[in-house]
Image (cartoon, rainbow, N blue to C red; front, side):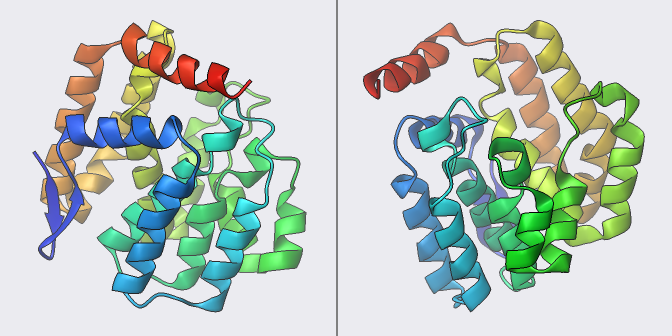
Length: 232
C-alpha cells in the first residue's frame, strides 16, 4: 500500500517506510539530509530561509532527546514528506517542519527562535509544541483546536509528524502509551487526513491497525540499542 498525490509517491508500503525510518535512527542524519536536499533540488526550493534553518538545525545539540545524534533525521524526514505532499507550500512551513521540536529537544526557547526566524515561524512552532509538564489528556482538546485554527499547512505538519513517528511506535514497550498514541491520531488527525486526500486517509487507517497488531518489537528495539551503544 502506498500514497500517491498528483502521481508523486508520498508514502511507500509500511514495511519499507519502517525500514527506512530505522535506517535513519541507526545512522547519523546524513542519510535523511541527502534525501531532503535532493527534494529541494527536484522542486527548486532553495529559498534562503530554508537553507538557513537546515544549517541551524544541524548545529543543534538535541540533548533532551535520547536519540541525540540521529534525532535530526526526524525533522528532515518530516520536511521531506511535507515537500513531497505539497511542493509549493510556503517556505515558512518547511522551516517550521525542520524546527518543530526544537523547544522540546534542546535548550533553545521559542523566543530565541523568534529572534532568528521571525514571529510567524516561532508562533507555528509554539503551536505545535506540547507542554510535557501537564498530562496530555488535560490539554489535548485546546492543543488541537489551536493547530486546526492555524490552518491546513500546520495541520499537515502535525499529521506527517505523527505518521513518521508511528512507523517506530513499536520501539515503545509501554502498551498504554502505544494505545493512547494511536487513539489520539484516530480522534484528532484521521478525519483531516481522509478529507485532505482519501488515499492518505486509507493509508493512515491501515497503518494504525498494522501498528496496533505489531505491538512492541524487541528485535527493532535491540537494533536501535546496539547502534546507540556503538556510539559510546
